[in-house]
Each structure stands twice: as C-alpha cells, then as structure tokens.
Length: 391
Ligand SMILES: *Cc1c(COP(=O)(O)O)cnc(C)c1O
Image (tube, rainbow, N blue to C red; front, side, top):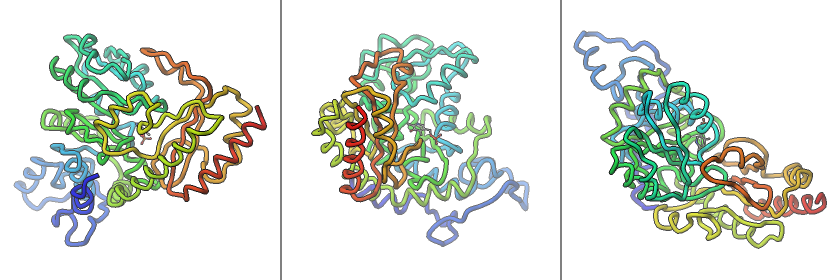
C-alpha cells in the first residue's frame, strides 16, 4: 500500500459541486430533477454520469462514489449497481451478444457460474470454463467469436491465484475484452486496470461498505469499455439507492486501515493454523501451499482477511461440532465486514468442470474480522477440541 493511495482514499470524489462545501456529499433522494431552461435539460443529458438528469442515472451521491472508485483503480469511469452480483451480470451482458463465446474461470463465485449456466445459455452465449492456473495457454481456447474472458482471482473458496497479465495479453492479442471480479483484493491490493483488465468488478458489499449493513456493487472500466458499460447498464435500468451508496462512500474512507488489520490478523491466524494437526493445508495466497502463491507475490500489494483451510478428515458430525458453538467466528454468507465469519464447503466438486477438486477433507472458509487475534485463536482452538471429540 502506497502512501499516495491513503491520501486518495480521503479526497477522491469530494468535488465541491457535489458536496456543497460539506466534507461529504448529501444523500440525495431523487427521481425527478427539475430544469429551468431547455438548454440546462439538454446539457444534463450530455453527461448524466456527473450532472443530475434523472434519479436513475445517479445524483451527486452516486457520482462521488463512482469517481472515487474509478480514480482509485485508474479507470475512465465506474458504474454503481445495487449488488455485487448485479455488477457482475450487467457487466457481462454489456459485452456479449447471441452467438458469442465467453471464457470463464472455473473457480468463479458460484452465483456468477449459475448466471452463466442458467441465463447466458438462454441468450445463445456459449460459456467455456478454464483452469485458473492456465496462464498464457488460454490463447489456445480463444476463438474468433470469444468476446469476453472473465477472471476472478484468487478463486472463490479454493483461492487459486491466476496469472492475470498473461491472460490479458492472450485475450487482447485476439481482440477479446477481459473482465475481472476483483472483490477479494479491493482496488488497494490489486490494480486490475493497471494490469490490463478492461473492466474491474467489485462487490462493494464486502470490504468497501465494510460493516455488513448494505448491498452494493461497482464496475470500473478503461477508455475502451466505459462508454458501452455505461450505456448498457443504463438500458438495463440498474441503479442503487442513495443511502446504500452513502454507506459505500463512508466505508471507502477507512478501507485502508481496516484492510491492513484484516490482513495482519488473517496472516497470523493462517500461520497458526498451518501448524495444527487437524489441518491438511492452508489456502491463503500469501502462503506457499496456495496454488499461484508466486503470482500473488508478483502482482498483489497485499492480502485481505478471507482464506480457506482444508481439514485432514471429511466427517460431517465433526464439521458440525466445529461450526457450532463459536464465540467470534459466526456462521453466515458474505464477508468483508468488521466481524469474523466461518463457513464449510462440501459441494466444491459440483461447481468445477474444467478442473477436478479432490481435497483431503472438509474445506472451511474463514473471514478474519477486527477482533483481538488471541480471542480468535482461542475460538478456533475450542472449535478444534469439539471437532476432535466428535471424530
Ligand atoms: C459476494 C460476492 C459477489 C456478489 O456480491 P453481492 O453484493 O453479495 O451480490 C460477487 N463476487 C464475489 C467474489 C463475491 O464475494
């Protein structure tokens, strides 16, 4: 993390025209925007991403967050969506058409996979999955009609780190666009656009909102992709509510300090877990057991608080004993908030088709929150005691 980004996090998006002189922009609840002259109305529609035209196109609350995110990742602009999944699906729909072929990473977030299999197939878009460790060999899979290559790195739950620059090079050589789900690293720990990605997608619900109290998404695009992304997102009618956007802006200001703490605590717990007898492998991009660890070292500025472990056994009762009775690691979907979370994954085999998943035992995913690290270790230590007793 550079000092420059810390300063940017404080200042970005705070144009006086949008804040009115307060530190933060107001939360605009608006549908109709009123114009005094015909010229004023026409001008608003020339740039509805930074001038109020109609509520659905955004207000200064929206513009401030979009501009902050776009600048943070070096993009030409950003579009805000009502959830991370809406950002993923609308970005994809903006760049594919019937008859196209899309290459999708095999370790993608499961609902993205479901969208591809259940929805894109209906629209005549062929989706082919690829090995997350494929690197530049992806060139062999790219066809004349491959419009989009979609990556997510690290992989969902299993944490494989992809060679994004090599995939980008192969895709661009063939004239395809690269979309990336960059939620895990946030704009601070992986510069997707800097590595050549055309559209960087974030579930802001996670670390940017950071407090488990709002659903929000964003897609940040380069010059090549922004016009189409904005237009097509508008055609679909995507817009997020101003209160949630405000929570995204508020969270963004403290993202760096929160992430640093998530990173530090997660690394300490990952190292501690590596020494446990019950654990076969720790899948944390900053540790050598994680596939693609070298690529993480080369390309990322840091690691967030989400990683997985593989237990030595595959025992349902012991797994239940592990999960139930936690003090700090609560069971629930999502992550990126201030609180620690735990989740067990049994169905990984069923959501991989280009690769095979054959791990030793149960996969447990942990989100390390902002609690005291010793408290978190004690919580896990007690969980392992329950686990052993149930084996
Ligand atoms: C959570 C998540 C999403 C979806 O975000 P929502 O805001 O829950 O819709 C997309 N991608 C990744 C990697 C996620 O973790």
